[in-house]
Length: 100
View 1 (cartoon, one colour):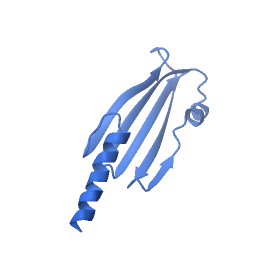
View 2: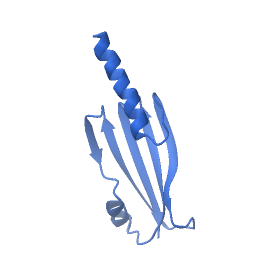
View 3: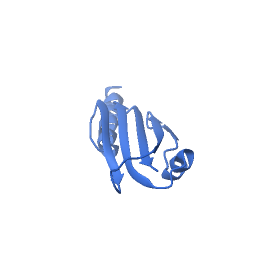
View 4: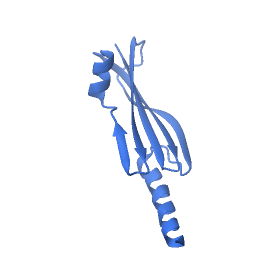
Protein backbone atom coordinates (compact mmCIF):
# COMPACT_ATOMS: atom_id res chain seq x y z
CA UNK A 1 0.00 0.00 0.00
CA UNK A 2 2.83 2.40 0.84
CA UNK A 3 4.49 1.61 -2.46
CA UNK A 4 1.29 2.35 -4.38
CA UNK A 5 0.83 5.63 -2.53
CA UNK A 6 4.43 6.73 -3.10
CA UNK A 7 4.19 5.79 -6.80
CA UNK A 8 0.98 7.80 -7.15
CA UNK A 9 2.55 10.82 -5.44
CA UNK A 10 5.58 10.59 -7.72
CA UNK A 11 3.35 10.55 -10.80
CA UNK A 12 1.39 13.57 -9.59
CA UNK A 13 4.58 15.53 -8.95
CA UNK A 14 6.17 14.44 -12.24
CA UNK A 15 3.16 15.33 -14.38
CA UNK A 16 2.69 18.73 -12.78
CA UNK A 17 6.21 19.65 -13.88
CA UNK A 18 5.80 18.11 -17.32
CA UNK A 19 2.67 19.98 -18.37
CA UNK A 20 2.79 23.28 -16.53
CA UNK A 21 4.76 26.16 -17.93
CA UNK A 22 5.26 27.43 -14.39
CA UNK A 23 5.87 24.29 -12.31
CA UNK A 24 4.18 23.80 -8.97
CA UNK A 25 3.69 20.46 -7.28
CA UNK A 26 0.85 21.37 -4.95
CA UNK A 27 -0.82 24.43 -6.41
CA UNK A 28 -0.56 26.42 -9.63
CA UNK A 29 -2.37 29.69 -10.21
CA UNK A 30 -0.52 31.47 -12.99
CA UNK A 31 -1.25 33.59 -16.04
CA UNK A 32 1.11 34.16 -18.94
CA UNK A 33 1.15 35.48 -22.49
CA UNK A 34 1.11 32.91 -25.28
CA UNK A 35 1.27 34.94 -28.48
CA UNK A 36 1.03 38.55 -29.59
CA UNK A 37 1.05 40.33 -32.89
CA UNK A 38 0.52 43.76 -31.41
CA UNK A 39 -0.63 44.94 -28.00
CA UNK A 40 -3.28 47.46 -28.94
CA UNK A 41 -6.82 48.31 -28.01
CA UNK A 42 -9.15 45.44 -28.75
CA UNK A 43 -12.91 45.31 -29.05
CA UNK A 44 -13.57 41.58 -28.66
CA UNK A 45 -12.55 38.82 -26.27
CA UNK A 46 -13.16 35.07 -26.29
CA UNK A 47 -12.39 32.60 -23.53
CA UNK A 48 -12.26 28.79 -23.49
CA UNK A 49 -11.04 26.13 -21.10
CA UNK A 50 -9.83 22.56 -21.01
CA UNK A 51 -10.11 20.53 -17.81
CA UNK A 52 -8.35 17.36 -16.67
CA UNK A 53 -9.49 15.32 -13.69
CA UNK A 54 -7.07 12.81 -12.15
CA UNK A 55 -5.25 12.75 -15.51
CA UNK A 56 -7.90 10.19 -16.49
CA UNK A 57 -10.63 12.39 -17.94
CA UNK A 58 -10.05 15.50 -20.04
CA UNK A 59 -12.59 17.70 -21.79
CA UNK A 60 -13.13 21.20 -23.13
CA UNK A 61 -12.59 23.23 -26.24
CA UNK A 62 -10.09 26.06 -26.22
CA UNK A 63 -9.14 25.91 -29.88
CA UNK A 64 -8.38 29.15 -31.67
CA UNK A 65 -10.89 28.28 -34.38
CA UNK A 66 -13.85 27.78 -32.04
CA UNK A 67 -13.00 30.80 -29.88
CA UNK A 68 -12.59 33.21 -32.79
CA UNK A 69 -15.85 32.00 -34.33
CA UNK A 70 -17.77 32.32 -31.05
CA UNK A 71 -16.72 35.97 -30.61
CA UNK A 72 -16.60 36.80 -34.32
CA UNK A 73 -12.93 37.80 -34.07
CA UNK A 74 -11.38 38.41 -37.49
CA UNK A 75 -7.97 39.69 -36.36
CA UNK A 76 -6.18 38.23 -33.31
CA UNK A 77 -4.08 40.72 -31.34
CA UNK A 78 -2.88 38.54 -28.46
CA UNK A 79 -3.56 35.35 -26.50
CA UNK A 80 -3.22 34.80 -22.75
CA UNK A 81 -3.17 31.49 -20.89
CA UNK A 82 -4.11 30.85 -17.26
CA UNK A 83 -3.43 27.60 -15.43
CA UNK A 84 -5.12 26.43 -12.24
CA UNK A 85 -4.01 23.15 -10.69
CA UNK A 86 -4.33 21.44 -7.33
CA UNK A 87 -1.85 18.59 -6.77
CA UNK A 88 -2.12 17.82 -10.49
CA UNK A 89 -5.37 16.02 -9.71
CA UNK A 90 -7.49 18.84 -11.09
CA UNK A 91 -6.06 21.02 -13.85
CA UNK A 92 -7.77 23.78 -15.79
CA UNK A 93 -6.11 25.65 -18.66
CA UNK A 94 -7.96 28.74 -19.84
CA UNK A 95 -7.09 30.62 -23.02
CA UNK A 96 -8.24 34.19 -23.67
CA UNK A 97 -8.08 35.56 -27.19
CA UNK A 98 -8.24 39.30 -27.76
CA UNK A 99 -8.86 40.91 -31.13
CA UNK A 100 -11.12 42.83 -33.45
